[in-house]
Image (cartoon, rainbow, N blue to C red):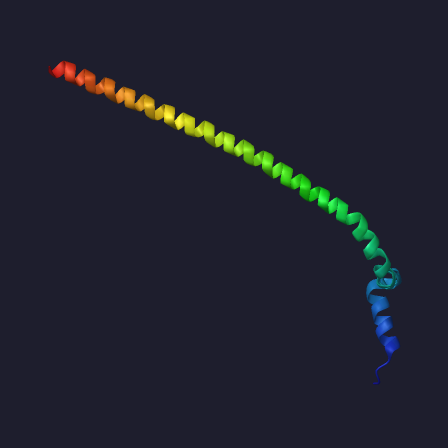
Length: 98
């Protein structure tokens, strides 16, 4: 059995079909023309998406930082209250034992 290029073409056509074969060949032919055009359009879109992501990150970071400050304030207030309660308890004990 001898190698025939037509056999490969028939196998490909049978596997992916004629429309798939036409689409593949068209893509190979049009790619050098379409890639630069898509890059011209895609680059500003990508840049805008990146800028939007940076702005969103900065806003989220600000919100998280503020939430952290609020939490630290709550912890400090809770420590002060615990210290006051501890002082009241020790004052009560000293008054009873005196």
